[in-house]
Image 1 (cartoon, rainbow, N blue to C red):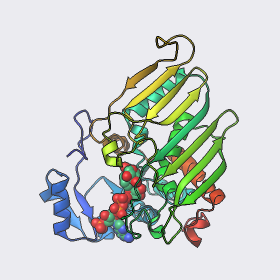
Image 2: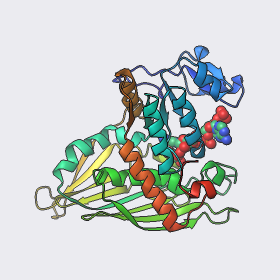
Image 3: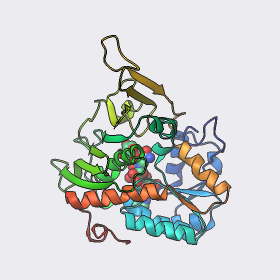
Image 4: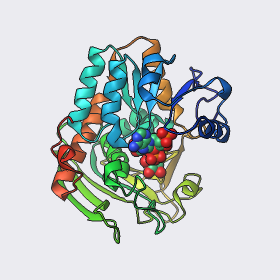
Length: 353
Ligand SMILES: NC(=O)C1=CN([C@@H]2O[C@H](COP(=O)(O)OP(=O)(O)OC[C@H]3O[C@@H](n4cnc5c(N)ncnc54)[C@H](OP(=O)(O)O)[C@@H]3O)[C@@H](O)[C@H]2O)C=CC1
Ligand SMILES: O=C1OC[C@@H](O)[C@H](O)[C@H]1O
């Protein structure tokens, strides 16, 4: 239930059908583990195509590993389905541009599930804080946590290149989203440097420690990711999602104030603002943090679900957040090229495949 609705939601999200390669029993166990309401009525398909062609639902949520997204979006929108697709929406910008065109031709809504953008703390930052802190001059954005433990098998999606493995596409998409939010979608932002080091001791080269520098005419952004290093605090990721105390993961430095966003920046709940000058000082004269709390209800992925539900309800034809998704996919394309991160011929050509 936690996954599907919240008390203040305008919409009652319901899971009504799923497509899986697994058995019915496996699906039913999953429903039970995740407390899915009315799960006895959820249609279980063993064929994605059949579900798209015959299923009775408003929106399909694509949550397979990222190299599959492109073909799956094409199939879904061709069946006139509204689509919410996990991040990164596709493996490169050209693919998503094509998907968006097809979605428009088929009169449906398409949206990348970049849930962080729609959480209350992020919305507050965008609508109420960024307009007050002056010109943003520099952004630090880190998203690192140790996903790759020594016992993680090489065929896990985090280490298997055919499944889209790599920290840039998995974690970098969030760190870059924060840059885009902080710079308010500045369109002249360019990747000026990218460097990558692979996960040590594994047979294939999977990008791990990535450092990307972006610049606009007025600002610089420094981005880092890693799926082996602890980043801003030590405990395992899902423990840290509930951590009471965490070091800043994102820092936005503007001319009037700086704003720090504690880990986990993918699910922010607090904004720590330091106003420059003598407005808000500690007894020793140092700047005092103004802590703005904007909790997310439950896990928080339904904020994005509300956004697409509203668009579908209003019968809009739209790729929600298209320019944001494309900017970030393009930055990742450029960073991959500069850092020498490779997948395989078709994807490295950065064309539609
Ligand atoms: N927003 C967020 O917080 C998160 C987003 N993600 C994103 O979600 C996506 C999936 O990640 P994650 O759930 O970790 O990935 P998984 O590897 O767990 O795959 C998810 C499901 O996709 C199906 N699947 C896997 N491989 C294939 C295949 N080759 N062909 C067809 N179906 C397949 C499987 O379902 P079945 O066996 O039932 O068919 C599997 O359970 C990624 O794009 C990732 O970036 C991931 C985690 C969190
Ligand atoms: O989107 C994500 O957020 C949570 C992480 O565990 C995962 O790697 C990533 O895909």
